[in-house]
Length: 165
Image (cartoon, rainbow, N blue to C red; front, side, top):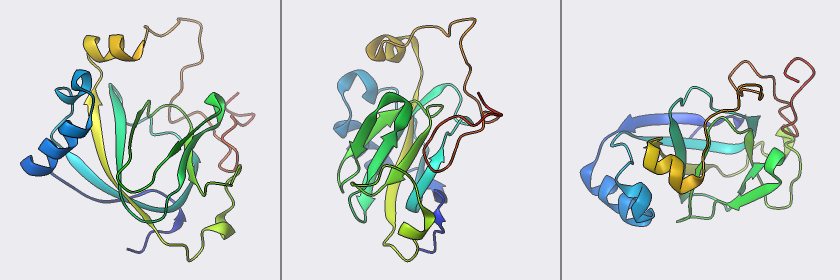
């Protein structure tokens, strides 16, 4: 895999009924039936802070398949999730996040040059009324900040930059 340091790169989409069945077995029952059948391979050598606002109407999931254990870091939430092989995480793709080594607080490209890649199976969960209820997701506040692909995110620490504040 030739993923550039800092970028999460798609390695292709596919559908496979057996992998989908395994994935659904690993998810809580309340979410399993809302997992979409389209799957995608992703690879990265660490990832700078970004959001995936192009995944509208879904929660995004990753299943760590190969590579070193790293953390998926959500700086606004002060949350780190381990991505050791076999682990799964489901999150809001609009929330700024990055993939960092366990001890890292900021993203620095030179820390990941030549590093072993992490490989994830990406999946989507339809944001249905049942999923919204299970995750406690309320309708957007009409005066709240709407995160989108136009919000400028500092790639090193996940803060909103002046243009995105």
